[in-house]
Length: 220
Image (cartoon, rainbow, N blue to C red; front, side, top):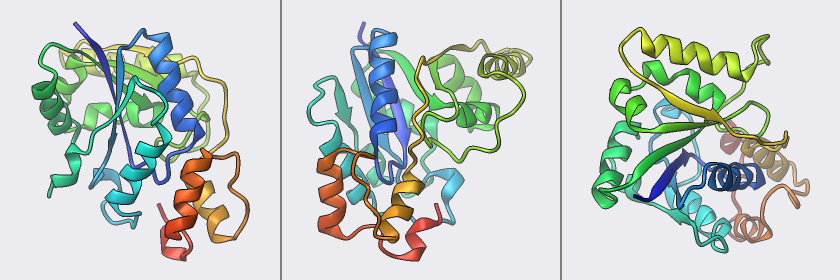
């Protein structure tokens, strides 16, 4: 049974923090594959502008090209509705009917899991690989709370247990890497160097297509 993780995000743009998270998950959890799923219409960002799906998917493809256990999925490109996790999971389960499923997620997003559409099904189907705050911008991070990441995850576990949902999770052991997509977009807008914040191949793609040069691109 292949051990496969889903790694969803806007990846606008993908950077070294995302790659470190995926590589850590791959090795810490003995995964066979990490499937990168750029979101088309992320529910939490419906009113905010972002780079086109084609650009974001292309940057992910470039960034992961040298890791054979990373794979890009563009299944969400054809969706007209918001990119809900339950739909993504069902579509991928058709492609990989015998897989054992994992989901790579930031701690902030993990805390919203009880509010996800059909969260009971999604939560119980996957083991959740949680990236603590500060390692990358999977979602916007509020000020750090007094609770530890372990305590925060345990709270979510208790919330779902009260609804009869068993939750399997583990924290990814990742060093702090203070890189964010919003920082890269701001640097690009200000004509500051983005070298060493993301793979050179992605940097060249951004330069070629003149991405993130307008103020509207910075609001995500």
